Length: 412
Image 1 (cartoon, rainbow, N blue to C red):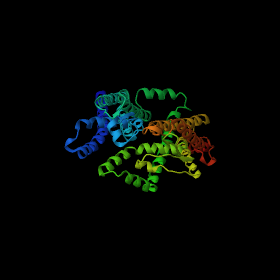
Image 2: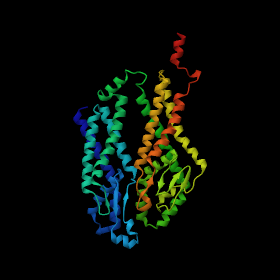
Image 3: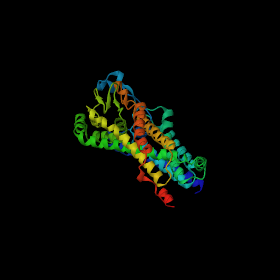
Image 4: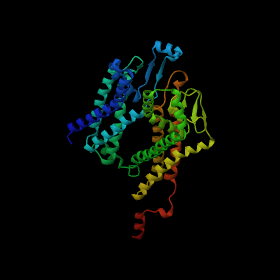
């Protein structure tokens, strides 16, 4: 495919990704604006509001400064009038990363992934600059350089991941192929990087899937608490819709918290609080309905959930070793050990990234500390995945598992 066409397609992908994310915000905001304010609506504030929320959804922290009139009317403590809001709704970030990965994969299949990734990221950066310069409200403000940097960084990471993964498997006739040719000089180790990434992806998918299932099951059992919190807000129908949409955007963030809970360290909802399988210590929790999912007590029996990451690691180890055995080229003990350690490191790094993206400040005072701590999550998740992966990768095989190729050689 011609390089110009690859550039154009990647640019279109970036425009579509940004347009969908902004449209998802603009559409409901337009309806809300029309219903709430009617003919007196300040339509000039609609785009800045959507742009600011779009930046926030890509991890840009916001500085909240409530007007003095509102503080006096509501009776708030003046010290709580200004605070940071930095726990983002990861729905937007995840959508951009996935769409960018799709764009990077297409560029790699077209034969020029570097050009496609660079083009898409550049176009997304232009859109990000425009949103940063035209967005911003008096109440919500984002640091300009972070508002410019974070959205294209998300797109770049997603596009690179999709492009490199595709180029590694399909070949690119360039940098990746030269790297693979260089690694082929060490046959016992050439397959290790691919096995590590493949195994880590399997382990991470298992843990995230279990976390999503945990959130769904908790919603079934604690649905009454969520409804009660909704009723306590006494919101009108428009308010219920707004709150519901906001909570929907935060579902991936809750899944990230559930990953930290399954790994063991858990998460916090305020300074001095802890929610983990080992125990739950909560103070006054904000009356947000979705926080009704958070258990108010714990049991020592819940510590069994830490076996989930170990099981995910074991599945990853089984997957890699089965591929090696079926290919008739099982790796040596050294490369299998390196593969197990690599899978654990990548899984732990992913856990740290999820924790970092889903932690920060939810409000003033004690709510300035919320979410999981990246360090403990990375250590716990990495060690648990390592145990499971090492068991399956390093355990001696049974005599009956001899490869068919070896059997044929013996017959000859």
